[in-house]
Length: 453
Image (cartoon, rainbow, N blue to C red; front, side, top):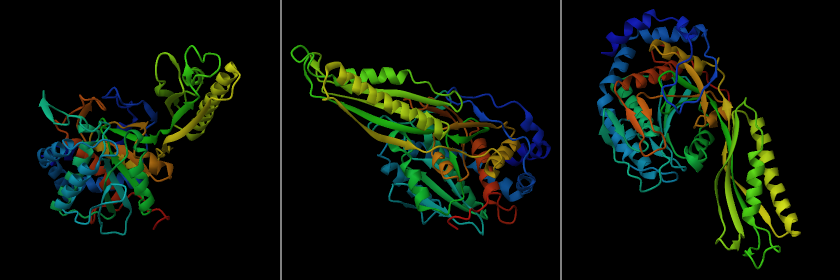
């Protein structure tokens, strides 16, 4: 039982645990820590979690999460085996919606952007907390998404990123309803579209556009125990197209410029751009194409450019350098042949806002306190996720894990090991309960925002 195994350690752990070294990454994909974990928490956070810890109802609820673990894996398999490529999430959305409704969220619905949205009202007044996981995966239509079991692991594209998060949300809803736990604040359950690739966070942008009442966000993504994402890496992506008259490689030589040569000049100039180490700022020409044959001067060429940074100012500075390098390359190619017939166009195909949730905000401290109670040292990190949207709006947001060891993200060999994975689901649920409060047990830690209320 969860109660007998963890109740005693809860009472002996102290905030001194937080002074230890940062958690060693469990996965090669995990980014370095971006900030120091707070070593002193506000008294209200400590008091709230002490009340949650002492509540028999809360212990019974978390024990129910463990008891529901095997059944939740059925939801995981069901949803994983419904393909959800970028811009093709509808079937998975419909299945997730049906499960939410079957588990008691009768007013859940699909919004105009294809998000699944359902509100579990609290007894309030209290904050509105968005709890979410994304529906889409990086894998194209036709990918084999059949779940396979071997060596204690479940293998399937998308099973951890992010279908595990969806199944945890369903488990939370089930146990909250069955155990008749009323929160003080409202819980907005969301399975959202558009997190991966060129989805451009369209689902989460729509959520915050349509729901100004949201006071904070806790998103679920595959992540080692104790990891809390507090930084949203911003990115701009461009599709660049070079166009000229083209011609025969021999007959037209010296008369027309090459679109591919201009692109090559641009790539070389981009490669020489220097960016700051801190805040980390990056760029890459990710794809290239063009031309018609080996013996033709290319009339067309195209490339895609990705620019990222942990802060907007260096991102914009790098973007200006990249775009200037492209224009300069076209000018040089035209000058090479004394013409003006080569042109370039650019299209912004990705715009992810960036931001940061302060480490001393109550939403981070709640996650730290919950991690401590479960014996985990907290490690704060950054990445590009759905939390970028609220962070960019100045709304408190974090991403945490839903339990289980995972690996092989974005590859056909993606896997998850759910041995005792229920512990992570308990940990993150406890964070959520601390933020919205439990009726008769604790008051919400998350503050209501003035805007939208």
